[in-house]
Image 1: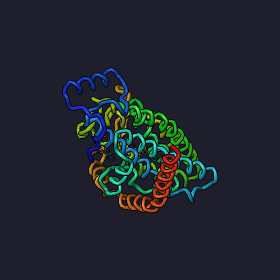
Image 2 (image 1 turned 90 degrees about the horizontal axis):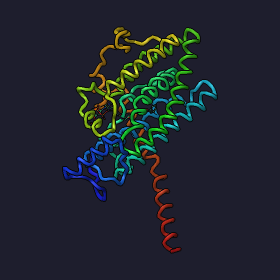
Image 3 (image 1 turned 180 degrees about the vertical axis):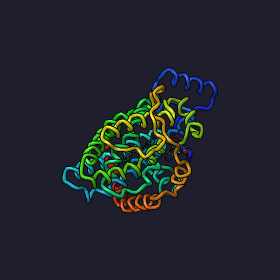
Image 4 (image 1 turned 120 degrees about the vertical axis):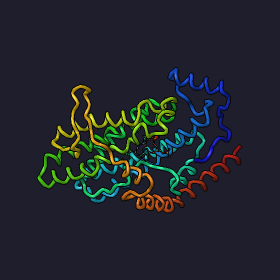
Length: 324
Ligand code: BYC
């Protein structure tokens, strides 16, 4: 990750760092012009830009089904959901810019294959039921993670999360409604929806990131109030909530080790295939190459729009200078 420290107030002195930690421990919100340790800034740029990329790349799997939605109602819902994800990307790129990282810089890092985005979007959407499962499971996972991030110590990130969570909540509901309808439908619909859940369940659990003992960033992010829960804690909340929702509509969870622990009140689940996770994160998942190709082409095709916007901004600036 590049350094973006020009004109920004960073902290180097030990006393300043203690004062900063004190502000975090007091529950204060850190705003863009506040002094902050360079490492805090870099960690936020890393995480928020990855999050923005995930929203934008995340439009692709569902976008694949817009032209084939089974009714006008479903098409309208899907169109507006995918459009919402683009909006989330824009809020998050803007929030990242408040840290001194330009949108152009972070997007270049994605297109050059240097920046990560969520592993989940490297899986294919093979049937219409995948759209339902993404809404229910993937947006369901995103809500659990982002409700925590809505309390993050960095003001622009937490405020973006509040709005995003409201929209994700609608996304999850429309997905779960579709799941319930298909689970209550014809045998073919039931088979199709179960097949989609079987394929997406484990990749969704991977979205929360590696186990806590293998998560190098968690401790620092928790110390700075960016995260308030660990990857494993969030994953457990997700399992507890979604197993119940699955059972309520007659969907099976594809995990032979799943069992309810009466003492802890939690659902215990089987081991995640971490080799698969790291393989996808390193760019070798089923759809990584196709996703990046689609993003690069979209960026190239949008060049004229960026150039037109820049020309318009220059023209406006010139006429303003002439008038003054
Ligand atoms: N995929 O130390 P860790 C949406 C990386 S979109 C890929 O635990 P951290 C939606 C991690 O980056 C919203 N990489 O990291 C859109 C790190 O590598 P680097 C998606 C992953 O930051 C359209 C390394 O593994 N949500 O909802 O403490 C349609 C070690 O990990 C993943 C977000 O983006 C992964 N799954 O925790 C529908 C949430 N997991 O950077 C829906 C924002 C880990 O050190 N991000 N890695 O090279 C986060 O909450 C956290 O960054 C993570 C990781 C939980 C993802």
